[in-house]
Every structure is written in C-alpha cells, then in structure tokens.
Image (cartoon, rainbow, N blue to C red; front, side, top):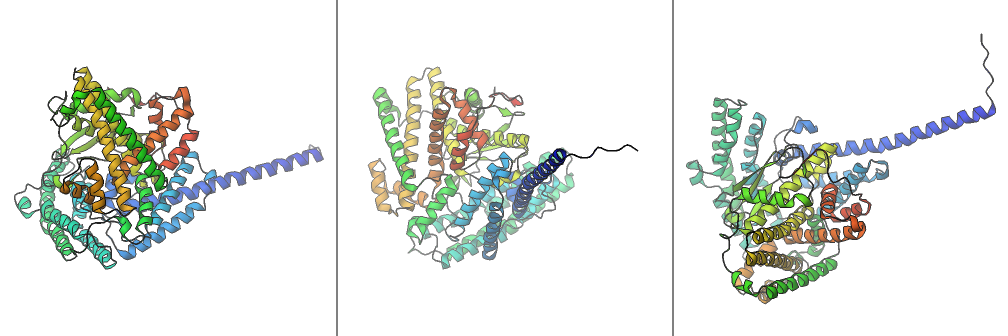
Length: 619
C-alpha cells in the first residue's frame, strides 16, 4: 500500500483558500441566479396574467399565445368594476414592491433595462390610480364606442379558435358597455360628469355606428368583414362550409341581439346623465386636476421634464418655425398665391402603393433594413359610418410574432390625396409606425428578449417618431417635386411642413393652458384669433377637441421635440461618427422607452455594425 505524503501547511492554506474562493463564487452565482430567477418569475406572471385578462388585447399582441406560455385562457373583455379597480391597484403595489426588492445590478443587461422601465411604468400607473374618475373611456375623440368596432372588424382569423374567441367577445359587448355606463354613473356621482355637449356627441355615435337598417340589409362592415375573414379559413379547409355557415349565422345573431342593444342601452343611459349646466373645461378646473395632468403628461408622452421647461421648449420651437416660414415666403414670394389652391392633381403619385414604394426607396440610406422577409401592407378606407369619429389615418399594430401582413386605414373624409396622403403614409407606414413596429418585433424575437416588455406602452416614443419621420417625408416630397420640375410646389411642401409644425406646437401650448392653467374658451379664442382663426365655430371645435383629449397633441409634438433633443445630444457625443442612420438605429434599438431612459441609454450606447447579416435591404 502506497503511503501518501503529509499535507504541508502551505498546501493546507491553499486548499482552504480555494474552498473559500469556490464557496464565494457559488454564493456569488447563486445570488445572481436568485435575482434573475425572481425577476423571470415576476415578469412571466405579469405577462401571462395581463394577456389572460383581456383577450382582445392579447389577440393584437400575439398570433400564437401558447408559444408565449398563455394557455387555457377564457375569452374575456375586461369590464370595469370598482372593486376590481381597487384590487388591480393593490396588485400593482405588490408587484412594484417585489421588483424593488430585486437588485438590478445582478440582472443581465437587457433584464436590468427592463427592470428600470417596468419600475418607472408601474410607479406612473400607481400614481394615476389615485385619480379614479379623471379618465374618459367614452371620449368623443376615439373613445371605446368608436374604437371597439374597428378592433372587432380587424380581428384576424388564423385558426378556428380565433373565430370562436371573436364570437365569445362579441357576446360580451353588452356587459362591457354596461360596465362603462356604470363607470360614467359613478363619475357623475363623484362630481366628474362629462359635459352635456360631449355626452350628446357620444350618444350620436351610439346611434349611427351600428344601425338596425345596415344589419337588416347585411351591409354593416362587421358583417362584410366577418365573411371576408372566414373565406381564407374555408379555402384552406381549416373550417368546413357547414361550420362557416353556422359562424355567419351566429355573428349576425350576436350583432342584432347583443351589440345593437348594447349601443342603444349605452346611449339611453348617457342621456339620463346629461346636465346642461356642465360646460366644457380643462382638467385644471377639477380638484387636484393639475396634479393629475402632470402625471398624465408623463404617462402619455414619456417625458419627465417639468411643465415650465416643456413650455419653454415649445415657445422656442414656435419662434424657430415662424422664422423659417418667413424665410421661405421671402425666398419664394410667388408661393403665397399657391397656398389656398388644391395641388393634389399635380402631385406625381396618386396611388398609395406607389407612394409607399417611393418612401421606402428614399428612406433606405438613413434607416436600418428590416430583418427577415418583406412585410406586406394593405391600405384600406375607413367605413363610411365611422368616418366622422375616426382619426385621419391609423396603423393597426401587428402582433409580436406575425408581422407579415399589415393594415393602414385612411379616413378619406379627412385625408385628401397628394402631398397630405404621401406624408400620412410616411407617418403610418414607412418609415413610421409600420416600419417601427415590424423592426422592433423582429429584432425582439431574434434576441429572445423578455415578453413582459410588450406590456409597456410609450405614446411619446411611438407618436413622436411617426411625426419626426412625417416631417422627413415633406423633405422627400420636396425632392420628388423638384425632380419633376415643380420648384414652386417643392417650396410649398417645405412651407406646409413648417406650417404643420407651427400649428401642432401652438395646440400643444394651448393644451397646457387649458389643462394646467385653466384657460377659458374666451381666452383660447383670442389666442386663436391672433393666428387667423376668426370663426367662432372653428375656435370652439379646437377648444373642445383639446378638452376631450388632454396631452394628445403633446404626445405627438413633445415626443418629436424630445427626439430632436436626443439627436442633438447624439451629435455632440459621437462627433464625426454621427450619422442619421446611427441615430435612427439607436432610437429603434433602445426603445420602446420613456425619454428619461432613452437619454440614459444614449450615454453608454456604442455604435454597432450598420449592416446586420440577417437584414433584407429596402428596394
């Protein structure tokens, strides 16, 4: 038997040192794994719970919920209930506390960034929950009563389950609208009743969006679009002809016996709440209205700047735009006589597909290419029954896991052809919402990031970008018109861009005046008169729109100014390495996010390889 040599003191110390070091490494790694595991569990629970709580929302986020751990769900529209709202507030408090117990330094870089975004977002949500009756889900401006039919009409059918989920949701619309009426009644009891003039607008929408006449003649868009969506399933033999017939009959029955009465009941209930003594006024007229507006501004725009600083930014930009308009008018004196003329016929393109193709060609050098295959887009007209209540145009966000087919809606009653349609398609399509969404979704999936990030929404990030690229599209249009030999029209396009910027800037300032400084209609009318709005009806329409949609103009225009601020800072940081391409990639890669987080990201951002191997170049 071989004898072992005795262990020396030096060897013993080395062994103990190794054991201590190894134990330290184990504890160190366990500590990291513990925080990562807790974060993964919390965010997974958040994501699945949120998706299961609102099937309509889930369907527009995910094409295949099961692939993201969302299984065994029951189709449900998230109805309002005061007790449920309190329970939700308590859950938010608990989730926020659980997140704050995690050490972000012990998370991976992507998870640490998400931790920060989730924490800030939940803090905002919690702050807003302290103002339970300040929100207006039935606003005459894109309220639930006008948005829900569009979401139902565009509810895509990929499987039989999708059709059955859709019909189950349609069957709940009466309960859903009834819960919104309860909320309005509680608001009225608490002293937050909607002005009578606004209630009348909503009632008129209830009377005209879904009508017995259209349903009886099978011409309502919720009938025609349902049949159109069933056709591919029938063609691909996912459903049989008999099943299709049964689904069509069920859809008609639910529209006539559930949805139509739901609108009627909502309209009748709102009629009982009308009080002609309640007049339109801003949030500042309400108790703690200023505090609510400050928090709403953060939530809607993603900007954490004090209101005084925002006002200064807007005022400086207003002066800049005004001076630019004067320069263009001085350089092209003949342009004045063209301002009031209809120039749509002289624009080189009239077909939306041609315009989108031109936009994609012109943006190619300054924007990263989309990863993966091409994304198709269909431009549709808003149904005639919805034209009075819809925005001039909108892009329906594609699901995270299916960005192949995209839809842009154009409200023809509010969007003429020519330059305006061209810049609108830039805003909604390329390089606007569609491009931004497809780029984000594909990069997100490729990187295997935490799906809880999809719970976050940043209006200023998204709408600010869409407005930013819309202004770029005016430059594209000016180049296009110059190429066609239309020099005056090209200058007019530049003038239109400055004029639109000036107008949005003015309305953003008025938003603050109404909702934070409690400016009256008479005060706003005098301001508008100084800028050429002399018709009292037009002034009233502008005032009412801003009262009905606080922070809406700021979501666009302050978001745009925040992007310009980030861009200027990027120029300073990157020096000779700065290009618009690099800046656009930074903005797309680091978002969606609030602008405070984007500013922090910019400080440490490293310019990557500009040509990812997996990308598909634009034509």
